[in-house]
Image 1 (spheres, protein in one colour):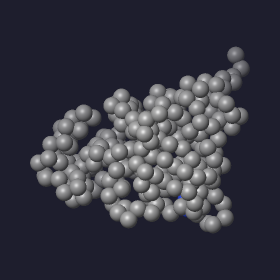
Image 2 (cartoon, rainbow, N blue to C red; image 1 turned 180 degrees about the vertical axis):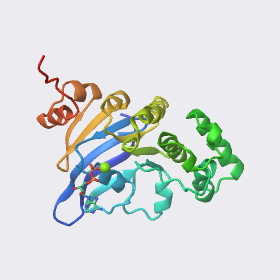
Image 3 (tube, rainbow, N blue to C red; image 1 turned 120 degrees about the horizontal axis):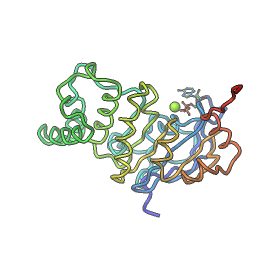
Length: 251
Ligand code: ADP
Ligand code: MG
């Protein structure tokens, strides 16, 4: 296996000191790999992504990014630059243009020149079909367009790994596909990604590996083919059945 970009070792997280939301979680994400994290609502998927970014303190275990412990990092901003995170809400600055939103962190945090940051931003916007909207403000964009901007903003920082947390969950159905297509394109470019999603056919298409989280544990680890067509655990079968509708009508 290729070198791991991310290693989670025996991670334990509790919010109240009693119940472990994450209980002894361990897995790696290799360079160029796409890992999809699935599980029922409330099972701790967002918590896990937030622990990776050190937005949450943990009670035990480690998050290693290229061997460096994120939770105890002395220079947290430096390590956070290596992690691109895209959430359900886009968090674009309303009073800044799309181009300004994208180039803000490359210029302020990475001290890149305006010209350099803007040139790359424009190239990335072109790739996601939004070059013409560079000088608009967020309110002038649809939800799907804003979410594509949020992805471009993350990419412009050249992260080692991208974390996606249900990025299409708040979108109208007709906008879901345009965002998922962008992420599929990133997978083709061999970007390293950890993706939380409820879009099952997308998950199957994009994943190199599926992790199924429930009750604080990784209940099943499988290939996408295996997980979606012959899951190993009863719990996974049950979870997948919640996405299917049975035909149950009198003829
Ligand atoms: P998921 O993303 O899989 O739906 P979350 O990580 O959001 O799950 O939540 C996992 C559990 O942790 C839930 O029971 C949730 O209520 C709880 N939780 C999440 N965030 C907090 C918080 N900031 N304080 C206390 N409990 C939280
Ligand atoms: Mg969540």
